[in-house]
Length: 157
Image (cartoon, rainbow, N blue to C red):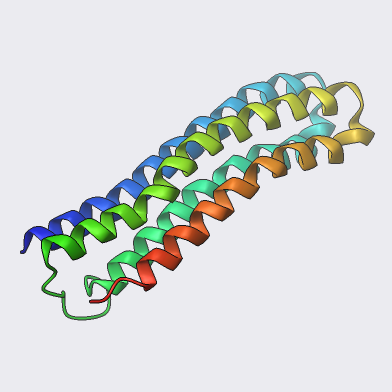
């Protein structure tokens, strides 16, 4: 296995790992807030569950990026490429946007969604406002996903 392939694999691992950690933290934050609301009023479960799901998407974006990267270098569905160190470092760099933004945005989205749970607890008819506020944070994860994918597809193999 070449050094280039090692760097590419590190990139794929970081994309999935860091975005996944952020999602786990974000979903956990919302779950803690939601559990309190549901213990008082179980009928609000579906409303707070939607808020809890939102920070989980960054982990999916990291996983998608890792799968695309692994496919491009031939680890999934092909013959592994002989990558130069420069190519491997390029794949590692391409994984960084979703790895870093996925980690950070999922945590902040979790905090925003937890605040939305507070809205739902007091005024359930305004639940949509909490969802919109949390979804605004999602924008930056989507942009990072887009940049990572564009970079991965534009590295010559």
